[in-house]
Image 1 (cartoon, rainbow, N blue to C red):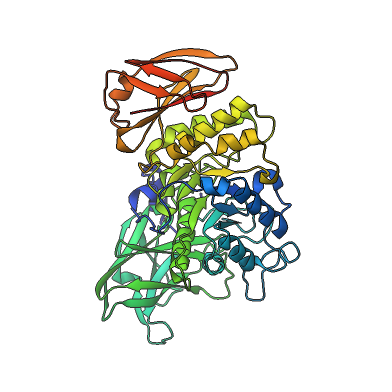
Image 2 (image 1 turned 135 degrees about the vertical axis):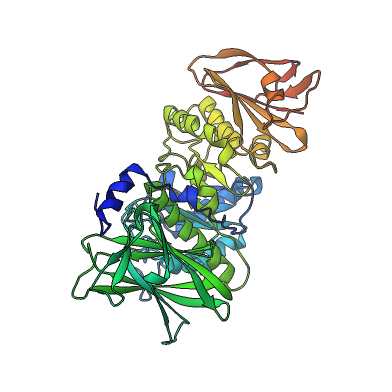
Length: 539
């Protein structure tokens, strides 16, 4: 661990007073991007076609989605995953479609798909390159967000390949300057006009104009604060941070938290040192009257780094959609962070859906593992913000009919996005019947927008999902390779405040998949096929 210019006492002190995670200490506002409240339904190119996509395939697939009735059933999003774009950005640095596979460009294709009633999604990565080593959006968030918004994109998947974690070290700050954009009339505030907290400390320094700098701003352990910044009028200003170049062999990060609301990040690269000082700038919003500016490094944990980068893209997507000329089209933001840094704890602040695990495969044992992890995360979901156990593999690989039914039912109960991943041009009727089941889709799209909760865990799980008008969807999931009989008391459902099922003397219901009629009193007694489900709606 680098001392990074900290006083020796402060350096030792930090080992005994661990810094708090940024996510917990700074409550940033949830980004309201105007996206829909219910989980999206659609199709993605990745599971079947990987890196072999072109305009003809996309348009043929959309035609098949419409012809098979999937569009009418609610599958509106046509999402292009990795490899839609060229390895070359255009002359203005903008993303562009593969020059031979999408020769007309992306925007004309989107316009054609829109005319047929579809919404279109694209993909990038929160790294220097995508997973297929094509141009990605780290450090280009604003440009890329405005490019895809101008094209009319309405879904954006942001992957985690070639990711670069933000530095946990801060620069040594000797002052700040504030000026209006395009003005040379700047006001300088030296560091001695700030107050320091935590591990932050003033250090004598003959190499900078004011004779001192502030160190100890690392890892959310200390901060310096200017609480006397007075502005004659509200507006945008250039905030220049003046730093002492030291420890130049590694990158540094500084955050400016302004008036406990707006948040700006300075990425400071490894530096050459022909001079002892440097200047780094952001355009920030300041209010009329007194302003408070707090400077610190926000990265106490790796999860802080992931959150801040995904949050930044979320802000740019929301802003880009609002700035787009013509019809406002919200961009559903998919955080594909693979669950490494617990995105379910912060995903609803930044976007609309967050991957809970690494990529899905058409293997039932892996689907069960994804389910086991995701079912525990129900409390993190909100209207317009959903746990994402990844795309559907229904009809792919060697999944049996029972496994396909179970897979689709579980995703509906989990209130997960329903994004098909098969070749719709060749979809079997048996698979089509499963993914267009109106009752299961209504459970997924229900306007309570709540995922299921696992009430009983065992070889047969009992899941309950609140629905509108006091109804409750109940799913019995047999995880074993042989049929199982279960008799489960309804008391646990009656007593659960999250489920809130009204007590009745009896429930007469039809099982969703078989149509069998059941009468339940105080217990649910059923036999569930191997690796399959029974689903009921109690009301």
